[in-house]
Image (cartoon, rainbow, N blue to C red; front, side, top):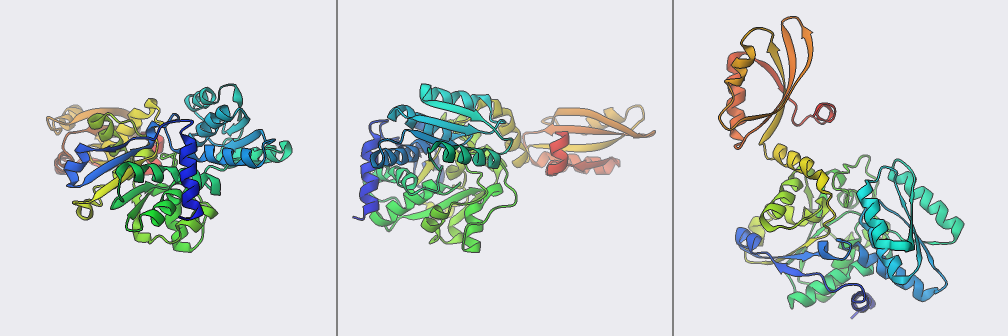
Length: 415
């Protein structure tokens, strides 16, 4: 065995001081649906509800072994990495300074503080993460502290490989396929490096959010590149630039192995896992399950492991998740309707709605002319085909309307 494999096993053994192996669970619902043996590697069940604790713990452990006098650690994060670092600081009895953007939700700040106890100090600075990161690195240099990268670090990658060590030991054999979410690439780098050595027959698929496809861009360019724009909804994987070390570990991948998951489609998967299985997943944690329909024909009869990487979901976001899911599935639409300003016009429109159509939003925007007024209207239905019938009736009656459901600019300001 190589040094990496041996070190990954040693790291896994050391992690037992913090928590037992996360479950590898066969999912009956998904297995029956796809005619395969579908297992979930439940990283949403670590003490901090994500795999990030593994890498933070290992990196901190290695630093402490090499330099026992180092007792100050710094990171910049608004999410799972911050919580993993906080937990590790408390375990090792060292001081952690965690920089977060001032826009970080209070729930995430409170959880980080809880995991760290008296071992961590939280510094809120910067409206955007790049500002927060710069401030943390300046502080780190001034204080002589050690900076803990969320993914682009060899010890972090080695720590994340413990997911693969547990998975292989729990399954007792090599899976046919492992599906991994990708943000900065630390988890995918560790898991694939380990399994490519101990189970070379195992295949991989990587999943990125459509609005944050940094691995796709890096493979196309032959090096990490910075995305000009990132959709932050999948906050656990919305990374503008893949790490240099993680790219070196993943550059062997065929671009065809990388799948893109639309943010709104991920919401459908999150709701299904919650309602059917009672499993709470954050957007990044649901990505590996989200692409199963895309792979349906190729996974029949195979053993597939989906890594559910995190479950830090704020239930205040649930209405947004439901909204996105309905819009993606075609069950909810928004229109700007030009309503004639005459008696009976509104009643005429309402009579066009079907028995399963429900008005969820009705707002008079402005009276742009004496004879017409603009109305923002949201309609929810049970069958997507109902909208085809509705728009046909609107056309036949001569109503002027515009479907703005997919218009990001208008939706941001009006919906």
